[in-house]
Image (tube, chains in turn blue, brown):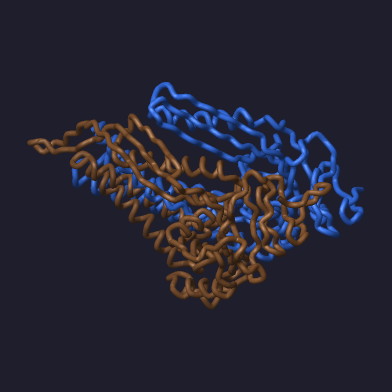
Length: 318
Length: 321
């Protein structure tokens, strides 16, 4: 039981909490406890309740190519709210050469502070732009809080070596005796909420993980319809056969039969393999995270640049 | 500075409770719009760009729907679920870059008997440019089109930005996100981007980069400025699925949209699969006769086939604008 220093209201909070927002007057204050440095522990409050999270999951699943048309009628059989601890780090690198060349690098990374996370979340998670705040007691309804299993300095050397290798790789082109400074600072602990939803479809259960701050589906499993599996398999096989046939015909006419067959096989496998692999799966795993990332403007340019490099290298080889 | 009695953060102007996290350097009061500097040493002027209304964003969305090849076909089945706008803080930094590079370029020539000869040529040069960078003043975040927003702001040359104190706060309906990066951090980030850009330019001039020296500086007499840009996120549904649309607030320009993959798109991807396979099969037979075209065709065909198959199975398309 804690008391708000401003309005004197009393309310319950879990032990691990360092900061709290009074549910009555909105005042934020610190509860002096524990070994985590003050000002370094905060939370993302849940914006999405379990009903909305499940709705998001189903609407995400219903747009999957290959998911059953009536996936929307799946029923929720279990829900858990996990507040997972993440360590935040700031890494700064600076390198300078006597000739004036310099390199800067700065990174802010969050790492999951659990050895065996209860739900499949990547160790490096990016947050949505909105929503960071102090803990509110209303978020306690279903939440399970996890204490960090990995120490504060657990990822220090990892961040340090990442920053160091990044900076040194860049500066080495400028001079051979650079002065390199790398500084890594622990920024604090954050508890981030995820919904773990288990749903039932045709007597089988499937899992979905939804970000409880912005409702993005982080991870989802769904059953794949037999009809779609057949489509994927058929297209996959046809594309490989097409490659082999056209490759051997064109190779035959140009007196390079083997090269033709090989090239056709490579092209066929490039498209066919993933289609065939997909067709073998009864349960498909997917994520909505790429929708948060958006399109990368540079992507196509990079592909073309790399293509050009490859051909140059090959040319030198030839 | 915000009033801090018994660690309560309240607006110095109106006494309203502030949305403050340990990382916040400035919190703009959501009741009166007063900027409360939590980190006094980081204090600077804040600019704000007035936003168009919710209806303007809605119009921009339907305009996009009507003019988009895919969306216009399903416009009767689209309904808007939610529209949210908020102010996102960015640092605008002006950087001068001076770089020098050395490396090798591979030249391809055809010999007297038609044979292909390659030789390495030593090249060097300088790269100088000045550029404005928009650095998101919040950490470890990622959201649809958040990066494009500042880019669009810089490119669109907005003239109606005003000082935070001069805006009529009763008309601002958007939530303001707190700034978390100070000026120093923003400068480092901008310098890093400028460096990478210069290096990329250098790499495109050579086939092998052997030496690269770069000096990045803040342009003379330009002080980085903190600016609040309006960002709008709209979610819409088609059949039972949800998709998103992002627009910039000052001109209601669509920045990024996620769209359903319709049946004729899938047919197009199917066409892409087989075109890719055919291109790679035919061009690979040419490898001995004309190596550059043969190898390039094989790789390009395979990539086309791979990407098309990947998109054929995908659930969403992201489209810029």
